[in-house]
Length: 254
Image (cartoon, rainbow, N blue to C red; front, side, top):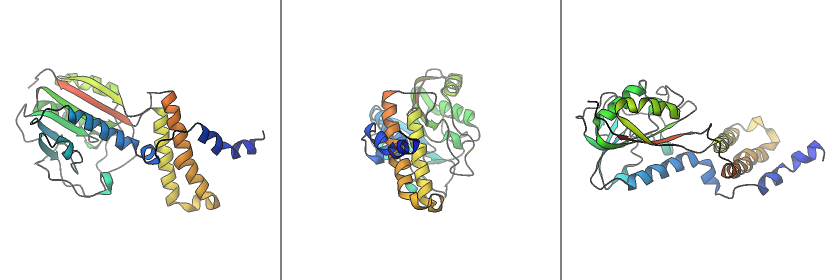
């Protein structure tokens, strides 16, 4: 088959091996899977537990901890775009730098910190502070990217964190990692970037002239579906969008 004929058959080939998940799942898996992980963790927290959401922002997970004594922290009111394209923060109980939260030692049973550490100039000190205010036996839930594009500027200081970062620094503050799980593998990461490319192409129609519909379909649906199917067949963990981490405080270093 001539090369041009092979290219023309690409949509057929891709569709035959494609995932049939809804497109919304393919395009939003990063947020959806993270939300599902936090939801599952919240369900294991005892009623009445003292929970602090560090860097809570819009307080996205408030309802998941409705059975708890849920408190929030953030360093200031951010005026850029947050999750869900909202710019408004939720009600914040403690306004301070993350390295100096105004509560006593061992004050909380659970600390939640999602997609925050990349926005912190001193993430190691932030980890130390969260360990300080977590009670012995308390649980720390963290999510952060492995690699991310620039966002929430100027408060974006690091691209992300590897499993080895958590393994090295958590024990320094009396924390034992019980879970460090990737949010997807290599093929899901590629699918996310293809979806991102489709969105960029929608905003820049002049880049592909008369082929706009085909190009958007290619990167926005066919390739992501194919990549999700590959992910189900072969998981490659060297590349991921980020990690979900649970740690337990086993030593009081205070």
